Length: 410
Image (cartoon, rainbow, N blue to C red; front, side, top):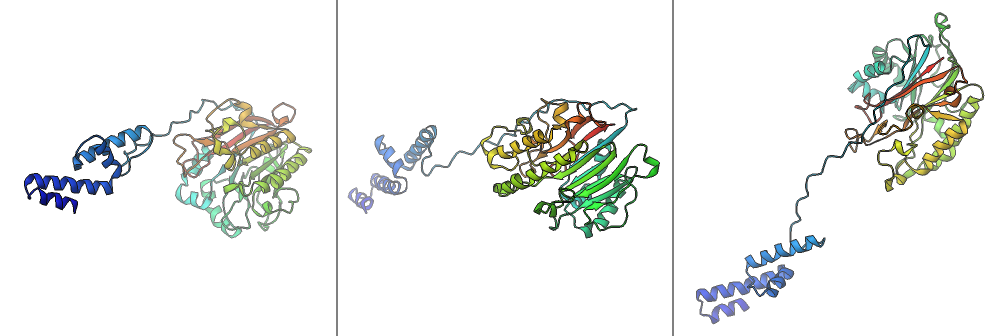
């Protein structure tokens, strides 16, 4: 109305039209962009669209420098995200093994679902076998099979790994957890027909190889006999009792503390406590090698972003879990095999988040270990640790873990 009155008072001339338009624009921008309109008025300019837009740009620049954003101004496009910097891997070498040494080799891989890996990437199994130098024992974890699934999977697996026999431990829960020991036929003779649910497996070594190897028994579960606990329904542990070399080999897929650390009390107060007791009892008889996915990054060297505040909220990197791992090493008198040979090596991990695409930049954690009794590194036991290694580029192209391994001389 005010603009129309101005237009009429000037007799409808071009000057009057312009004045009316200016007044109309002033009203429009007063309601739509009041801050910009006040900026124009403060500068003594007419409230034309050009002036209001110029004021908008001026305010945007000023408020951007101050950390704010002018209303009605589009935010500047973010620069493309930089590719994450790679975490450097210190160069290391495997320990030399002489041709005349009598050795026993063990490898471990958490493959995160054996049927999927066999279907999608069967060549990885052949690569692992070669990289680990055809070990006497290969442990696979988180196979997620039920007993009825085993025969069909064994057929596929033995086609890739001829000359091995398998002893399985399956979870009662479908599609969850589970470990299996693949043992060379030179070490493990034909198995007697028995339920896969039997806790103790009757085993023997072929007579033709008794001068080199001897296996006495294999046990499913934590404890002999297994303790009555939830984790022993989850197929997490196998124990090999060997006489040649004279040692126990325990494989474990340690319970994860879970999202929101909902299982951390169960893990620390039950699992860790019972496992320490079990390993201590075994060591009273002879040396022990303890291998597997321990679901904890022990040292700062084992964490790509050590010191980050969020680590206390993430399973596997909390202080309480890392301290529990250190307590186990101390109480059981164990040595971390990899750190024994490479105490200061940085950038060597066994786990990389697939979801975060961390493998290309090597942003990982070391969660998988080969641990041995101290007597296996100080010369006091007949079996001595000759090498402990991480196969960082083997298997990590499928899933989130790579394989680890060790060699024992005896």
